[in-house]
Structure formats: structure tokens, C-alpha cells
Image (cartoon, rainbow, N blue to C red; front, side, top):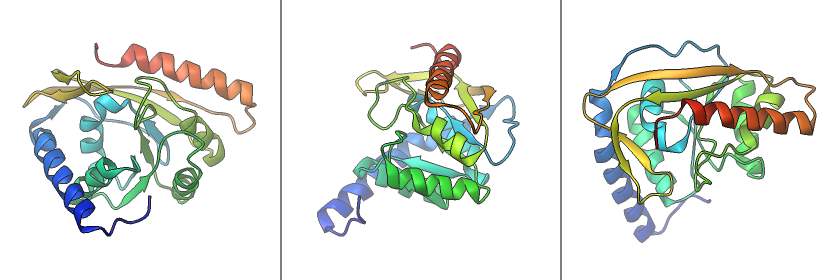
Length: 207
């Protein structure tokens, strides 16, 4: 999406940013019970409904964030920049999003760690798209499958059933490392995608 210049759209993005910022302000009260011990650079993936604790935790890591190429995505980007994020790519986690894919790959090869919600930005829910696997192969970096476990309220009317943490919720990160061999075939990459999807579904918060 090109940079928005229409006043009505800019106002909408600003209102969306205000709403997201207010909703996500609970992050300031979260109590992290463990650390994410990952090697850099890498690709960190976490399901869309659980992104809040992870993006809050990574805010000082100089990582690259992928957000939706939509008005909501631009609103979220404004919020993330206010938290200190400098590197934000607009797109979707599928390999078909070529511009976003190449932008992320360039950042990874420059030593940046990337965070992706592999089922965003419109689902299907808890289904990993192929982009993260291709990025790991091309960038020659590992993937970390991450699920922040915490108690909260589910917004079941949203496509992802977003889980907003309760104030002062305890957050415990569960994560596993996944290696994608540079010489992996298309069939092997699909097997890795399915393996990653299964592991993520096993780790994530109850629906």
C-alpha cells in the first residue's frame, strides 16, 4: 500500500492508532516470568492472537516487525513506533507478498531479527503460511516458534479471537528452535511448515 495522503484516511489511521494504543496499554503491567534466549539474527514467529506480550518484550531488541498492509496495520505501526520500533515492514506472511518478503530478507541479511505472525493478517487462524520458512531458508537463519502463555480475555468476535492479557498478568514464554536447511527441497519445506504449525498449536494458549 502506498503512503496514505487523503485527510479522511489519515484521520482514520490516527483514530485506529489511538484505539490500539489504549487497548495495548495493559502491556505496561505485564510480569514476564522468563527470558527469550534466542540467537540473532533469527525469525521469531507467534500466532496473531498472542502478539501483544511478544511485541512488547521485543521493543528494545532492534527487531523488524511485519504488520498488515491495511489501515489497521498503519495504525498499529504508529503505535509500535511510539514504543521505539524503527523497522516496520507492511505485508503478509505468505511468500506471495514479494515486496514485503524481499524487504524482510534484506533486513535479516543485515543482521536484524524479524518477528512475524504467520497466520496474519486475515487468517486462517493458527495456520502457518509459507513465508517464514522461505525467509529462514534464504536468510540462512533459524526460526523460533514462540507462544507467550498468560491469562486474559478473548475477543471472540474477531477473526483471530485475540487474547488481551489481564492487567498484571504473568507471562511465560514457551518456545522451540526450528532449523531450515539451505538445501531443503519444496517438499521438505512443506514438511517443516506442517511441523512448525503443529508445534505452535500445541504450545499456544487454550482457545
